[in-house]
Every structure is written in structure tokens, then in C-alpha cells.
Image 1 (tube, rainbow, N blue to C red):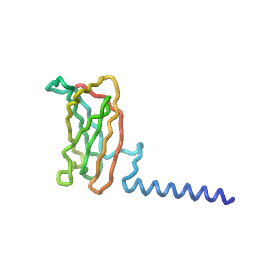
Image 2: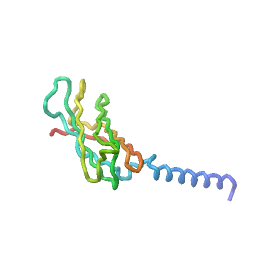
Image 3: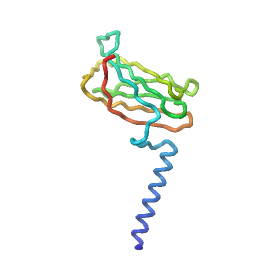
Image 4: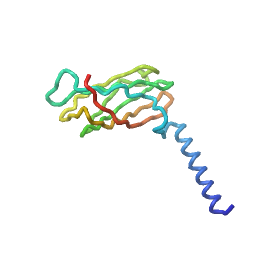
Length: 141
């Protein structure tokens, strides 16, 4: 085997090992793997009707084997709208449980026939972090 081939093989092996270690530590996620949190629904507009913009609710469910201790989501519907969930180390989101957060999209709006990117960020009790983006449709309640 030539020297250059050996270096390429060693480089590929090293890159694979580094990626596997990063994934195991929770710093790298794969879109093919199931995420620890599932997007249950994105609903709107909700009552009461607000002339400044519609009220939208995001509901997430913990589908991992461990509690979630921090959780936020950002909906990009022309502008960025942040959803904060009441989750902490003292108040974790346990396996199989759902939680919702509402935001009034001041100055915003949406088309219920379009998909919008929703980015979910969080931390598991073990310290593993997750971050993923999925296209969602805002459904009428």
C-alpha cells in the first residue's frame, strides 16, 4: 500500500472516531436519529384574537429515556418568534410528558398552507444537548 493511501485511511478513521465521540457526548446529532423531543403540534391563531398579531402555541413531548432540563423553540415565520418552556433541573420534562408555550406574533402572521422552520434546542439531565429544525405547518385549533 502506498504512503498516501495509508494517510487517507488513517484520516478517515480519525474523522469517524471524532464524529462518533462528538455524537456520544451529545454535541452532534443526526437527522436520521429520533430526536429526544417530538413536535406534537403548532396551532394558531388562538383566542383571544389579538389585533397586533396571532397567538401561536407549540406543544412538544419528551420521547427520550431521560428528563429534559432546558427547552426552547424558535419559529421562523417571516420574523423569528421564540417559545420558552417552563423546564429546568428543578422542574424537568419527564419521559412521555408534553409541554406547551404560547407566543403572540406581534407584527407577524402566517399562511396555514405553508411550512415554516421550527428550531428546537434543549438539554437532557445527563448534560447532552440537542438542536434540530423541522418544517411545520401552523394548524387551526
